[in-house]
Every structure is written in structure tokens, then in C-alpha cells.
Image 1: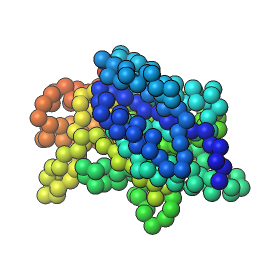
Image 2: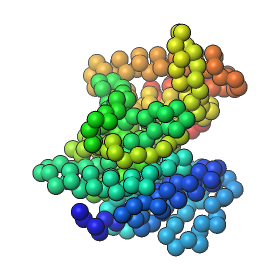
Image 3: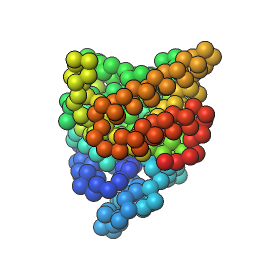
Length: 309
């Protein structure tokens, strides 16, 4: 295998220095392969990671005004390309890869890249939430919406359109061929947009089933709905706004022909379902969260993603 891969890692940090340190330590303890540089975008208001600025292999940008995940990832990709890295390994702060995660990702990448005309854009581990013991699935775009792709543990890898951002090992050779992540998306749907655009350019995006990563996904609560127990995600008003806005924007614009109309109907149904769950299960800020769903969906459908929450 090519031993001279040059790898940078990137973390988006926000008000949780312990989670950042857990992620940093997991990256530093990888077997066989090492990360040359660690890039951190700290959106925290009080700069809790200031003590890391004297570390030679860590580069931190502080943005207490909070520029979001998308703008940070754009900065990291641009920096890594300029510095002639081969890969950028991107993380949310609440992710912890296992010690052999990077080794498996790179081994799989190397083996598959030997095939003729098989270009890889992103290779990602299998993320699971330790609170729910559920695999966080990658997505495929099906006609008029993004659909979670059922995890297949019986194979070494499988393809999808969009792995989640956290844990994704991005080929910078592929990244050079498309525009960077859309900064206006801010926090949600960045992976869906970026992954699908790489696929449309002819690159393959993969989930490696033997590479594992723990990832705290949202704020899950268990509820009983229609006589069945299920997990639903509980969010702040800000997150409801961006989820409804960005998914409405992306899905209606990736849809073609008749599916553009069905996508619009699907997004309105999703919004109404979220409002129902808020009314039934949320304990605070119900009116604000309902307004966030309404406003976000409206702005996404009309294509106005420059308006922030």
C-alpha cells in the first residue's frame, strides 16, 4: 500500500471542549497511519481551546460569531489542497473513531483505487450512536428525496450517494473537481449536497463496514407513537429551521420534472409531521420551534438560503 499518503484531519468545535479532546485523542491514537495536521474550527464564544494553539501539529481558527460547519469545512478543504495533502478526514466534535478506523479506510481505498476507472470521492466508516445502539446510515437520492440506505454488515463496503460528514475521508483529488461545500447551508444537509455532487461527477462514495466510529447523533428521545416505541430526534429551534430549510431546498432542486412537484408535497408533509411531534413531545419553546419549521420550509422551497436563523 502507498505509505506516503498525506492526511489532515478537521474538527468543527462548538462549546464542548471535552468532546473535542476525546475526538483529538482518538485521531492521535490511530494504528499504522498518522495524521500530519489537525485543523480545528472553534465556533465557541469563549475560546475554550486556546491552550491548543501552541501545539505544532494543530491549527485553530476561532470564530465566536459561529460561521457553522459548512464554512469551516470549506476552509479546511481549501487549506489541505493548497498544502498538497491527499486526504481530509472530517469530524464533528462528538465523534470517536476506533483505533484501526483510518487504517481500514485507507486499505479499502487503496485496494479499490487499483481498479480501472474506479474513482473514489469519499470513503467513510460505519458510525453508530452508543446511546441508541443504532447505525447512522448514509443516504441515497431517490427520485424526489434523500433516503437512508440500510446498513449492510455482510459486505466489506457498499456505495451510497452521501455518507455523513463526520468520519468522512475526502479525497482531495476529487474535491478539486467540484465547488466546495455551500457555506449558506451552515449546519444541515452539507453532506447530502457535497456527496451527491461528487457522485454526479462520476466518483464513488463508500461506507467501509469494518471501520467503526461512535457518533452522538442529535438528541434522541424514545416515545410511544401509534402503539409503537420509536426514537425521535429533539432539536433546538435553530436546528429545526436549518433542517427544514436546507432539506427543502436541496431535495426540490435535485428533483427533476414531475418529481419536483412530489418533492414539494413531501417536504410539506415532513414539516407537518415535525410540528405534530413538537406539539406532542417537546417540553419547551413549542411555538418558536413550530415557527422555525414553517419559516425554514418556506425559505427552502422558494430557494432563499441566504437568510439565517
